[in-house]
Image (cartoon, rainbow, N blue to C red):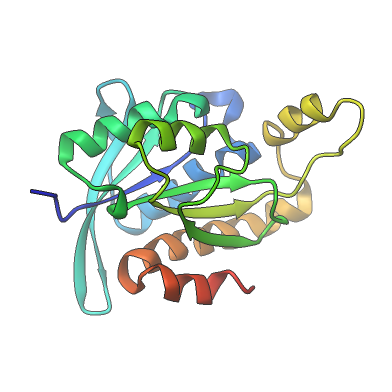
Length: 199
């Protein structure tokens, strides 16, 4: 019997040195949701910080879990699979929030399924769940310089911080990401795509 809980997962890397980096957009958005819905995190089997709460929107209440994997990005799937199995949450009730270099900073795209787009956290979740058919909120962080050291540039970019302008826009951007996750749950994917993907 599948649970009626939703699972929202914000991707990132644990630890001080990753705190305000582009790769931690998912963690930061999860923190906005935690604050908004009074969710307290505690440890889930050493794999994730996990909390649960209920969202009250549009005259409905929806119960959800909110997770921040502690496995480091490349093994995010271990945390997601463990929580999904433990609480019997099907992939169609999973929403993953992550950074995306193919989108300009401040842009959000919502999708389910499709390719991982080179994102190791998503690749890991695809493998662990055995399907790419779960919802994703892709938070744009823009792209590193290409060129001779493209790979290193990319790593330094996603693990880098935000400039002053972006830092000003960040709170609103994170709130939009939180809104997108809520909208998937309450309005469905198609409506959420209409709302966010065209921006």
